[in-house]
Image (cartoon, rainbow, N blue to C red; front, side, top):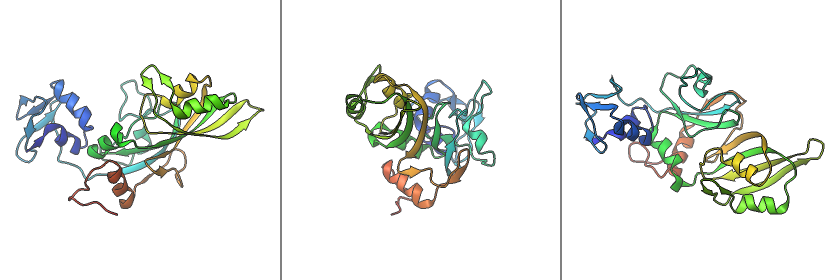
Length: 249
């Protein structure tokens, strides 16, 4: 017997957190009875349905690294008919989901998987998984503004944690500065809001690294599968045991 949210997550339907919300909304049944949060079930002997559809047995886990272009939203589907990141992986049959989000106007590194446990672990605030961005911002930043970005910026939803920030280039002709910013939080549109809070709007934004992985060798709009060693490394970061109870490395 296992908790329902774990079974749903392992089936690749949603992250554990999203599965809990489904249960709370009454969208999950076990043998025809609406389930409650905290309930357990046996996936092998009981019929578990989400929105009336029986869940499939857990799929083999797959892991991809995508170099997302601008103009694609980071969801599995969109009721407004907009292009999603899954449109860039048409050959993948598994029901994969992006690990976190990059907004429509942001490009760069995005992980996609059907491993809900790993997804949830990497996104948990306690793991402090680092993400690196390159931002083109208006104007030239003064030393006090750079220090604010590094030490913490006050936003509507709280003060940001210390960040790693360095100036890559200042172009007096365009009047723009190229910054590299590394953060381990996941506030909505955080890098854009941090820069705006110190008076410099972001004109272009790209995520170049996530959890120690980079875009090396992956062109814009293309993707690759993660290696077994990379998956094992991500499990270490997420503080999760590898399937079978072992970790590699």
